[in-house]
Amino acid sequence: MGLRLFSERGENMIDFKKLAEKNHPYVVEMRRYFHEHPELSTQEVNTSKRICEELDAMGIPFTAYPDYTVIATIDSGKPGKTILIRADIDALPVTETTGLPFASKTPGIMHACGHDTHGAMLLGIARSLNEVKDQLCGKILLGFQVAEENLKGSRTMKQYVLDMGGADHSLAVHVGNARDIGTITVVPGPFASGVITYKTFFYGKGGHGSMPHAAIDPIKPACEYVLKLAALPTSQYDAKDPIVFSTCTIQGGSGAPNVIPDDAYVFGTVRYFNKTLTEKIQHDIETLADCVARTYGCTSKVEYTFDPMIPVENNPEVTAICQEVARGMGLNLVTEEMGMGSDDMAMLVDAFPGCYAWLGTANPAKGIDHVANHNSNFTVDEDALAYGTEFLMKSAWELLNR
Image 1 (cartoon, one colour):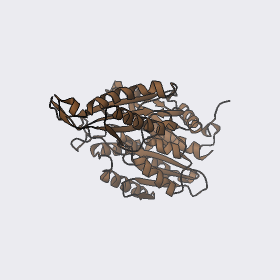
Image 2 (tube, one colour):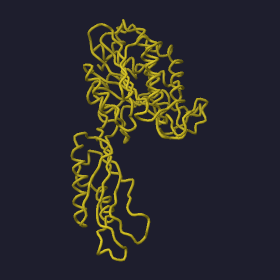
Image 3 (spheres, helix red, strand yellow):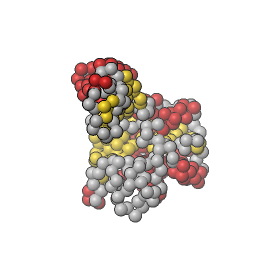
Protein backbone atom coordinates (compact mmCIF):
# COMPACT_ATOMS: atom_id res chain seq x y z
CA MET A 1 0.00 0.00 0.00
CA GLY A 2 1.33 3.43 -0.92
CA LEU A 3 1.63 6.56 1.16
CA ARG A 4 -1.68 7.79 2.57
CA LEU A 5 -2.40 11.36 3.55
CA PHE A 6 -4.02 12.34 6.81
CA SER A 7 -6.78 14.00 4.80
CA GLU A 8 -7.57 10.71 3.09
CA ARG A 9 -8.19 9.14 6.48
CA GLY A 10 -10.74 11.79 7.36
CA GLU A 11 -8.40 13.48 9.83
CA ASN A 12 -8.24 16.82 8.05
CA MET A 13 -11.14 19.06 8.94
CA ILE A 14 -9.66 22.02 7.07
CA ASP A 15 -10.90 22.60 3.54
CA PHE A 16 -7.75 24.03 1.98
CA LYS A 17 -9.30 24.26 -1.46
CA LYS A 18 -12.10 26.40 -0.10
CA LEU A 19 -9.60 28.60 1.74
CA ALA A 20 -7.50 29.02 -1.40
CA GLU A 21 -10.55 29.93 -3.49
CA LYS A 22 -11.87 32.32 -0.84
CA ASN A 23 -8.62 34.30 -0.71
CA HIS A 24 -7.78 34.01 -4.41
CA PRO A 25 -9.09 37.51 -5.29
CA TYR A 26 -6.76 38.90 -2.63
CA VAL A 27 -3.83 36.94 -4.10
CA VAL A 28 -4.58 38.35 -7.56
CA GLU A 29 -4.85 41.87 -6.14
CA MET A 30 -1.46 41.58 -4.44
CA ARG A 31 0.13 39.95 -7.48
CA ARG A 32 -0.92 42.88 -9.64
CA TYR A 33 0.32 45.41 -7.10
CA PHE A 34 3.73 43.73 -6.93
CA HIS A 35 3.82 43.41 -10.71
CA GLU A 36 3.23 47.14 -11.13
CA HIS A 37 5.91 48.01 -8.58
CA PRO A 38 8.90 45.72 -9.17
CA GLU A 39 12.20 46.18 -7.35
CA LEU A 40 15.60 44.68 -8.09
CA SER A 41 17.56 42.35 -5.81
CA THR A 42 18.66 44.02 -2.54
CA GLN A 43 16.41 47.00 -3.36
CA GLU A 44 13.05 45.52 -2.28
CA VAL A 45 12.26 48.48 -0.01
CA ASN A 46 8.63 49.16 -0.91
CA THR A 47 7.83 45.51 -1.61
CA SER A 48 8.94 44.62 1.90
CA LYS A 49 7.06 47.60 3.34
CA ARG A 50 3.81 46.55 1.66
CA ILE A 51 4.22 42.96 2.89
CA CYS A 52 4.67 44.24 6.44
CA GLU A 53 1.56 46.39 6.10
CA GLU A 54 -0.50 43.43 4.91
CA LEU A 55 0.75 41.16 7.70
CA ASP A 56 0.13 43.87 10.26
CA ALA A 57 -3.45 44.25 9.03
CA MET A 58 -3.92 40.49 9.47
CA GLY A 59 -2.57 40.64 13.02
CA ILE A 60 0.24 38.22 12.19
CA PRO A 61 3.53 38.77 14.04
CA PHE A 62 6.59 39.21 11.86
CA THR A 63 10.18 40.37 11.84
CA ALA A 64 11.38 42.81 9.20
CA TYR A 65 15.15 42.63 8.72
CA PRO A 66 17.52 45.40 7.55
CA ASP A 67 18.07 43.66 4.19
CA TYR A 68 14.24 43.77 3.57
CA THR A 69 13.67 40.09 4.33
CA VAL A 70 10.40 39.52 6.20
CA ILE A 71 9.58 36.40 8.22
CA ALA A 72 6.09 35.99 9.69
CA THR A 73 4.96 33.33 12.15
CA ILE A 74 1.67 31.44 12.29
CA ASP A 75 1.86 29.93 15.78
CA SER A 76 -0.83 27.46 16.78
CA GLY A 77 0.21 27.71 20.42
CA LYS A 78 0.52 23.93 20.47
CA PRO A 79 3.66 21.80 20.35
CA GLY A 80 4.76 20.40 17.03
CA LYS A 81 7.03 20.87 14.07
CA THR A 82 8.05 24.11 12.39
CA ILE A 83 7.55 24.40 8.63
CA LEU A 84 9.09 27.18 6.54
CA ILE A 85 7.21 28.27 3.41
CA ARG A 86 9.37 30.59 1.31
CA ALA A 87 8.65 33.06 -1.48
CA ASP A 88 11.20 35.21 -3.30
CA ILE A 89 10.11 38.78 -4.07
CA ASP A 90 12.75 40.44 -6.29
CA ALA A 91 12.44 41.48 -9.94
CA LEU A 92 14.73 41.68 -12.98
CA PRO A 93 16.33 44.45 -15.08
CA VAL A 94 13.97 43.79 -18.01
CA THR A 95 11.78 46.25 -19.93
CA GLU A 96 8.26 44.82 -19.97
CA THR A 97 6.44 44.34 -23.29
CA THR A 98 3.34 42.42 -22.14
CA GLY A 99 0.93 45.32 -22.56
CA LEU A 100 -0.90 44.24 -19.41
CA PRO A 101 -3.08 46.88 -17.76
CA PHE A 102 -1.02 46.33 -14.61
CA ALA A 103 2.36 46.30 -16.36
CA SER A 104 5.44 47.58 -14.58
CA LYS A 105 5.42 51.28 -13.78
CA THR A 106 9.18 51.26 -13.25
CA PRO A 107 11.15 51.67 -16.49
CA GLY A 108 13.63 48.90 -17.14
CA ILE A 109 12.48 46.68 -14.25
CA MET A 110 9.97 43.84 -14.47
CA HIS A 111 8.72 40.80 -12.60
CA ALA A 112 9.77 38.62 -15.52
CA CYS A 113 10.34 35.54 -13.37
CA GLY A 114 7.04 35.46 -11.53
CA HIS A 115 8.27 36.46 -8.09
CA ASP A 116 5.31 38.82 -7.90
CA THR A 117 3.09 35.73 -7.84
CA HIS A 118 5.25 34.03 -5.22
CA GLY A 119 4.95 36.89 -2.76
CA ALA A 120 1.23 37.21 -3.45
CA MET A 121 0.60 33.50 -2.89
CA LEU A 122 2.46 33.62 0.40
CA LEU A 123 0.34 36.53 1.58
CA GLY A 124 -2.74 34.53 0.59
CA ILE A 125 -1.40 31.61 2.60
CA ALA A 126 -0.80 33.92 5.55
CA ARG A 127 -4.39 35.16 5.47
CA SER A 128 -5.79 31.64 5.01
CA LEU A 129 -3.77 29.88 7.69
CA ASN A 130 -4.31 32.69 10.16
CA GLU A 131 -8.04 31.95 9.92
CA VAL A 132 -7.53 28.32 10.94
CA LYS A 133 -4.43 28.49 13.16
CA ASP A 134 -6.37 27.04 16.09
CA GLN A 135 -6.77 23.85 14.07
CA LEU A 136 -3.05 23.58 13.40
CA CYS A 137 -0.22 22.29 15.54
CA GLY A 138 3.31 23.63 15.73
CA LYS A 139 4.38 26.69 13.75
CA ILE A 140 4.51 27.82 10.16
CA LEU A 141 7.14 30.39 9.19
CA LEU A 142 6.35 32.51 6.13
CA GLY A 143 9.61 33.69 4.61
CA PHE A 144 9.51 36.58 2.13
CA GLN A 145 13.00 36.34 0.65
CA VAL A 146 14.94 39.06 -1.11
CA ALA A 147 17.72 38.77 -3.68
CA GLU A 148 17.09 35.41 -5.31
CA GLU A 149 18.16 36.63 -8.72
CA ASN A 150 21.70 37.25 -7.50
CA LEU A 151 21.58 34.05 -5.40
CA LYS A 152 22.30 35.84 -2.13
CA GLY A 153 18.99 36.11 -0.27
CA SER A 154 18.54 32.55 0.94
CA ARG A 155 21.90 32.55 2.71
CA THR A 156 20.72 35.27 5.09
CA MET A 157 17.21 33.81 5.35
CA LYS A 158 18.73 30.50 6.37
CA GLN A 159 20.59 32.22 9.19
CA TYR A 160 17.53 34.17 10.27
CA VAL A 161 15.52 30.95 10.52
CA LEU A 162 18.30 29.24 12.43
CA ASP A 163 18.35 32.16 14.84
CA MET A 164 14.62 31.60 15.39
CA GLY A 165 15.25 27.98 16.34
CA GLY A 166 15.33 26.49 12.86
CA ALA A 167 12.68 24.62 10.87
CA ASP A 168 11.96 20.95 10.42
CA HIS A 169 11.05 21.30 6.75
CA SER A 170 10.87 23.88 3.97
CA LEU A 171 8.50 24.32 1.04
CA ALA A 172 8.18 26.59 -1.99
CA VAL A 173 6.80 26.68 -5.52
CA HIS A 174 8.01 28.51 -8.60
CA VAL A 175 5.72 29.49 -11.45
CA GLY A 176 6.61 28.86 -15.08
CA ASN A 177 5.05 28.52 -18.51
CA ALA A 178 6.90 25.45 -19.68
CA ARG A 179 3.77 23.56 -18.61
CA ASP A 180 0.08 24.42 -18.62
CA ILE A 181 -2.17 25.33 -15.73
CA GLY A 182 -3.21 22.27 -13.76
CA THR A 183 0.28 20.75 -13.93
CA ILE A 184 2.85 20.65 -11.16
CA THR A 185 6.37 19.25 -11.20
CA VAL A 186 7.42 17.59 -7.93
CA VAL A 187 10.71 15.71 -8.28
CA PRO A 188 12.64 13.83 -5.57
CA GLY A 189 16.38 14.35 -5.36
CA PRO A 190 18.28 16.78 -7.65
CA PHE A 191 15.84 19.15 -9.31
CA ALA A 192 17.70 22.33 -10.29
CA SER A 193 21.41 22.65 -10.93
CA GLY A 194 24.02 24.25 -8.76
CA VAL A 195 26.00 27.10 -10.30
CA ILE A 196 29.51 28.48 -10.04
CA THR A 197 30.20 31.74 -11.87
CA TYR A 198 33.89 32.26 -12.66
CA LYS A 199 35.89 35.14 -14.09
CA THR A 200 39.40 34.04 -14.99
CA PHE A 201 42.07 36.64 -15.73
CA PHE A 202 45.30 36.06 -17.66
CA TYR A 203 48.12 38.57 -17.20
CA GLY A 204 50.90 38.97 -19.74
CA LYS A 205 52.89 41.91 -21.10
CA GLY A 206 51.56 44.15 -23.80
CA GLY A 207 53.41 44.96 -26.98
CA HIS A 208 53.23 45.64 -30.69
CA GLY A 209 51.52 43.10 -32.91
CA SER A 210 54.55 43.03 -35.20
CA MET A 211 56.82 41.89 -32.36
CA PRO A 212 54.95 39.19 -30.37
CA HIS A 213 58.31 37.78 -29.25
CA ALA A 214 58.86 40.94 -27.20
CA ALA A 215 55.45 40.65 -25.50
CA ILE A 216 53.64 38.02 -23.45
CA ASP A 217 50.30 37.46 -25.13
CA PRO A 218 47.40 36.77 -22.68
CA ILE A 219 44.85 36.11 -25.44
CA LYS A 220 46.29 32.75 -26.49
CA PRO A 221 46.07 31.17 -23.02
CA ALA A 222 42.57 32.62 -22.58
CA CYS A 223 41.46 30.91 -25.79
CA GLU A 224 43.11 27.61 -24.90
CA TYR A 225 41.57 27.78 -21.43
CA VAL A 226 38.06 28.05 -22.89
CA LEU A 227 38.59 24.91 -24.96
CA LYS A 228 40.13 22.95 -22.12
CA LEU A 229 37.35 23.92 -19.72
CA ALA A 230 34.77 22.55 -22.15
CA ALA A 231 36.67 19.24 -22.22
CA LEU A 232 36.83 18.82 -18.44
CA PRO A 233 33.51 16.93 -18.06
CA THR A 234 34.68 14.05 -20.23
CA SER A 235 38.11 13.72 -18.60
CA GLN A 236 37.61 14.66 -14.95
CA TYR A 237 34.03 13.78 -14.01
CA ASP A 238 31.89 10.67 -13.86
CA ALA A 239 29.56 10.57 -16.85
CA LYS A 240 26.66 9.88 -14.46
CA ASP A 241 27.09 13.38 -12.99
CA PRO A 242 25.78 15.97 -15.47
CA ILE A 243 28.03 19.02 -15.62
CA VAL A 244 28.26 21.86 -18.13
CA PHE A 245 31.02 24.47 -18.45
CA SER A 246 29.82 27.48 -20.45
CA THR A 247 32.21 30.35 -21.13
CA CYS A 248 30.02 33.16 -22.41
CA THR A 249 32.40 36.13 -22.52
CA ILE A 250 36.01 36.50 -23.61
CA GLN A 251 37.57 39.95 -23.46
CA GLY A 252 41.05 41.21 -24.30
CA GLY A 253 42.55 44.21 -26.01
CA SER A 254 41.24 47.64 -26.88
CA GLY A 255 39.98 46.83 -30.36
CA ALA A 256 43.19 47.77 -32.13
CA PRO A 257 44.44 45.11 -34.59
CA ASN A 258 48.12 45.63 -33.81
CA VAL A 259 48.28 45.93 -30.01
CA ILE A 260 48.89 42.90 -27.80
CA PRO A 261 47.12 43.65 -24.51
CA ASP A 262 48.46 43.28 -21.00
CA ASP A 263 45.59 41.07 -19.92
CA ALA A 264 42.50 39.17 -20.98
CA TYR A 265 39.68 37.43 -19.16
CA VAL A 266 36.98 34.82 -19.69
CA PHE A 267 33.63 34.84 -17.91
CA GLY A 268 31.25 31.93 -17.57
CA THR A 269 29.31 29.45 -15.45
CA VAL A 270 29.39 25.83 -14.42
CA ARG A 271 26.09 23.99 -13.86
CA TYR A 272 26.06 20.71 -11.96
CA PHE A 273 23.80 18.42 -9.92
CA ASN A 274 26.13 16.70 -7.46
CA LYS A 275 26.75 19.10 -4.56
CA THR A 276 29.77 17.07 -3.39
CA LEU A 277 31.59 18.27 -6.53
CA THR A 278 31.54 21.97 -5.59
CA GLU A 279 35.08 22.15 -4.21
CA LYS A 280 36.51 19.93 -6.97
CA ILE A 281 34.99 22.15 -9.67
CA GLN A 282 36.56 25.26 -8.15
CA HIS A 283 39.88 23.46 -7.77
CA ASP A 284 39.81 22.38 -11.42
CA ILE A 285 38.91 25.87 -12.66
CA GLU A 286 41.83 27.38 -10.75
CA THR A 287 44.39 24.64 -11.45
CA LEU A 288 43.66 24.63 -15.17
CA ALA A 289 44.00 28.42 -15.33
CA ASP A 290 47.38 28.26 -13.61
CA CYS A 291 48.68 25.46 -15.83
CA VAL A 292 47.59 27.10 -19.08
CA ALA A 293 48.87 30.51 -18.01
CA ARG A 294 52.33 29.11 -17.14
CA THR A 295 52.56 27.43 -20.53
CA TYR A 296 52.45 30.86 -22.15
CA GLY A 297 54.53 32.67 -19.55
CA CYS A 298 51.49 34.38 -18.05
CA THR A 299 49.97 34.45 -14.61
CA SER A 300 46.31 33.93 -13.77
CA LYS A 301 43.66 34.76 -11.17
CA VAL A 302 40.16 33.36 -10.74
CA GLU A 303 37.37 35.42 -9.19
CA TYR A 304 33.86 34.21 -8.35
CA THR A 305 30.95 36.60 -8.82
CA PHE A 306 29.31 35.10 -5.72
CA ASP A 307 29.75 32.07 -3.53
CA PRO A 308 28.84 28.82 -5.29
CA MET A 309 25.16 27.90 -5.15
CA ILE A 310 24.59 24.21 -4.56
CA PRO A 311 21.94 22.28 -6.52
CA VAL A 312 18.34 22.13 -5.35
CA GLU A 313 18.02 18.62 -3.95
CA ASN A 314 14.53 17.76 -2.77
CA ASN A 315 14.21 15.50 0.23
CA PRO A 316 12.72 12.17 -0.99
CA GLU A 317 10.41 11.66 2.01
CA VAL A 318 9.05 15.21 1.97
CA THR A 319 8.68 15.08 -1.80
CA ALA A 320 6.69 11.84 -1.62
CA ILE A 321 4.20 13.58 0.67
CA CYS A 322 3.98 16.59 -1.66
CA GLN A 323 3.41 14.30 -4.64
CA GLU A 324 0.48 12.67 -2.88
CA VAL A 325 -0.92 16.10 -2.08
CA ALA A 326 -0.74 17.00 -5.78
CA ARG A 327 -2.44 13.75 -6.77
CA GLY A 328 -5.15 14.33 -4.21
CA MET A 329 -5.77 17.76 -5.73
CA GLY A 330 -6.23 16.16 -9.15
CA LEU A 331 -3.25 17.97 -10.66
CA ASN A 332 -1.26 16.60 -13.57
CA LEU A 333 1.88 15.47 -11.77
CA VAL A 334 5.35 15.41 -13.35
CA THR A 335 7.80 13.41 -11.24
CA GLU A 336 10.92 13.14 -13.42
CA GLU A 337 12.58 16.33 -14.59
CA MET A 338 15.87 18.10 -13.95
CA GLY A 339 16.55 21.67 -15.04
CA MET A 340 19.89 23.38 -15.61
CA GLY A 341 18.60 26.64 -14.15
CA SER A 342 19.66 27.48 -10.60
CA ASP A 343 17.77 28.80 -7.58
CA ASP A 344 18.92 29.70 -4.12
CA MET A 345 16.04 27.76 -2.57
CA ALA A 346 18.81 25.15 -2.64
CA MET A 347 20.21 26.53 0.61
CA LEU A 348 16.88 26.17 2.39
CA VAL A 349 15.94 22.64 1.27
CA ASP A 350 19.48 21.62 2.20
CA ALA A 351 19.27 23.12 5.71
CA PHE A 352 15.61 22.29 6.34
CA PRO A 353 14.76 19.10 4.40
CA GLY A 354 12.04 20.05 2.00
CA CYS A 355 10.58 20.25 -1.46
CA TYR A 356 10.67 22.83 -4.23
CA ALA A 357 7.95 22.38 -6.87
CA TRP A 358 7.32 23.96 -10.27
CA LEU A 359 3.78 25.20 -10.92
CA GLY A 360 2.50 25.27 -14.51
CA THR A 361 0.96 28.66 -15.38
CA ALA A 362 0.61 28.68 -19.18
CA ASN A 363 -2.82 28.70 -20.81
CA PRO A 364 -2.69 29.05 -24.62
CA ALA A 365 -6.51 29.26 -24.72
CA LYS A 366 -6.19 32.58 -22.91
CA GLY A 367 -3.22 33.72 -24.97
CA ILE A 368 -0.77 32.91 -22.20
CA ASP A 369 1.71 30.93 -24.23
CA HIS A 370 4.80 28.94 -23.31
CA VAL A 371 6.97 32.03 -22.89
CA ALA A 372 10.06 31.40 -20.79
CA ASN A 373 10.80 33.09 -17.50
CA HIS A 374 13.03 36.19 -17.84
CA ASN A 375 11.31 37.08 -21.13
CA SER A 376 9.86 40.60 -21.46
CA ASN A 377 6.50 39.03 -22.45
CA PHE A 378 6.30 36.69 -19.47
CA THR A 379 2.99 36.54 -17.63
CA VAL A 380 0.88 33.82 -16.01
CA ASP A 381 -2.66 32.51 -15.81
CA GLU A 382 -3.60 33.88 -12.41
CA ASP A 383 -6.10 31.05 -11.90
CA ALA A 384 -3.10 28.76 -11.39
CA LEU A 385 -2.16 30.64 -8.23
CA ALA A 386 -5.07 29.06 -6.35
CA TYR A 387 -3.47 25.68 -7.03
CA GLY A 388 -0.18 26.96 -5.68
CA THR A 389 -1.63 28.26 -2.42
CA GLU A 390 -3.68 25.11 -1.85
CA PHE A 391 -0.71 22.85 -2.62
CA LEU A 392 1.60 24.65 -0.19
CA MET A 393 -0.94 24.86 2.61
CA LYS A 394 -1.94 21.22 2.32
CA SER A 395 1.68 20.07 2.07
CA ALA A 396 2.60 22.08 5.15
CA TRP A 397 -0.37 20.62 7.05
CA GLU A 398 0.62 17.08 6.13
CA LEU A 399 4.18 17.70 7.32
CA LEU A 400 2.99 19.23 10.59
CA ASN A 401 0.98 16.13 11.35
CA ARG A 402 3.73 13.54 10.82
